[in-house]
Length: 343
Image 1 (spheres, rainbow, N blue to C red):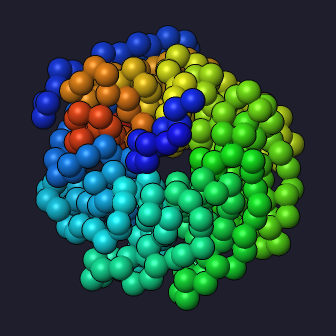
Image 2: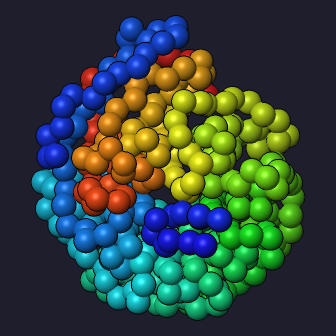
């Protein structure tokens, strides 16, 4: 049923300049992203890439049971986390830059010190693959989702499980706190996206419910006003958090098999990987594709891991190779386009 860090349910160092596909109002001002850095080190599929809160590091998790952390400015390895007994599906940085949490096929989460690069706590309780994890904005809690169909909330300091939510009727594919830490969104292959009270564990709202349409990913964007949701019909949808009303849709990429990350950048772009080996960038407001570019060496490589960061005037996208490539690539937009409408 699953291939781990493949984030899947089944029944070269300097590539050519990215091709752009632009349309819609203001597209002539768009500045394309170009390849800046290629990082090698993983021995198996990359499941997740994420920038550190201080913007200095990029981390990647893999089916090779490790997380590797690189310094962005030099491309050198800063640390490597490798005590899991099976592949790692997801990880997250604590906002206070003290810890990393990892979610693994070995049914555990582990909390790692960023000072010593060692595991300081093992979180046990899930009865199946742990697929996704996220720190609360104050770093004091962790939320996790599992193929055991539950969402669990943990105390970061003690490792004690604080709440078990019988959330879904199929594997949980994504979990995320909202910016004030009071809400949790979860998605599942049962076709539902749900919002929970993080303290009580009570269900507050079901945003999406379609048993014939697996939901592969969701996150709050920006400031928690919207929820970006990915489904296996190759459509990204934005819903209003408060009302559950559909706000925007983004089409063009391929997502019918894998759980792939998508993200909003600077309130202007929506960025997603795709099963056709491309990264897609949409204008948030017009819903037009601003750019699509081939990300990794092998044409059959799906791009399931992407992350975004804005560092001063430089905007960055990180991507991870999944099948054959196994590299992390950093793409940059060094000159910003004029500010346009925002979400």
